[in-house]
Figure 1 (cartoon, helix red, strand yellow):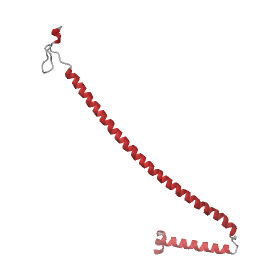
Figure 2 (tube, helix red, strand yellow; figure 1 turned 90 degrees about the vertical axis):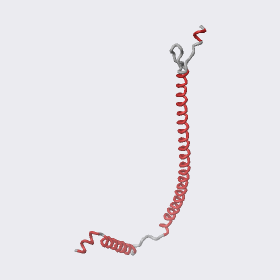
Figure 3 (cartoon, helix red, strand yellow; figure 1 turned 60 degrees about the vertical axis):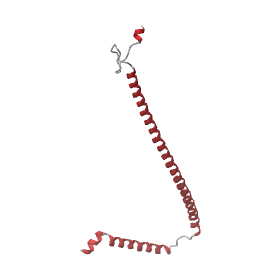
Amino acid sequence: MDDERDISHTEDGHSEFGQTTSTSHNSGWLIAAVVVLLVGLCVAVAHSYVADRAASHNASQEAQMTATINQLQGQIDSLSGKLNALTTAQQAAPAQTPAATPATQPAQTAANRAAWQLRTNATRNCSPSWRTSKSS
């Protein structure tokens, strides 16, 4: 039995009986496993870094949007207060102003007619279709 244990190996990994040693195969698989683990570790670290940057970017955008929303809400509240004040003033104003008398109504109608004629004439003077008919 001692003879079986004292098998000498050559430098190329073969024994005297033509068998290859398992240490060269094991070290090859071990190196491959270590390389795969290192690549996996690099991918995990890179993914963690990208995810962290995206999260911090999203947090800063959220803070900026929250500030904008708060500013807009303040503007809405301010405009609502002004609108309420105007509504209250307009509701109080008709009770204080006299109703339009029949004497002022024709004057308003004449003013409306004059304004309409001015707008119509201005439109005719600016419209290309009126220009072509005047030059013919």
